[in-house]
Length: 155
Image (cartoon, rainbow, N blue to C red):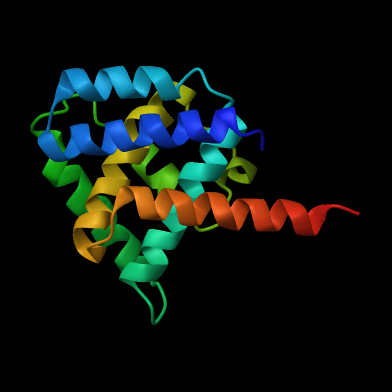
């Protein structure tokens, strides 16, 4: 990944997570508007890695289907009141995608970049509340993990 794109993803994600924590619709719209036009594959990789790391931290002994459902329900309930267009299906796609379960094979279309930009920060904020971590630390860890994986893929 080139340096400017991950930096832009990180900065917009940090603003989006802060907006979710404050339940600030205008700030979330602005941050999501910065994330959505960035390369979808890179945004998905970074945010998916952050979500996976958070899920692993929240469930160090392993993750069961009930655990994923609990995250989904908790996140949806805590955000439905202030975010009318919340889409539980997009939350589910993001969670399963972060876990490496690819629903595209089942004919389920990928979430639109704007939906990913709006919904991934909801899950990140929710899981950060459980794990007690910081968004900046998780983003740095995700980018580091991605960089190592990319280095290992080079011939």
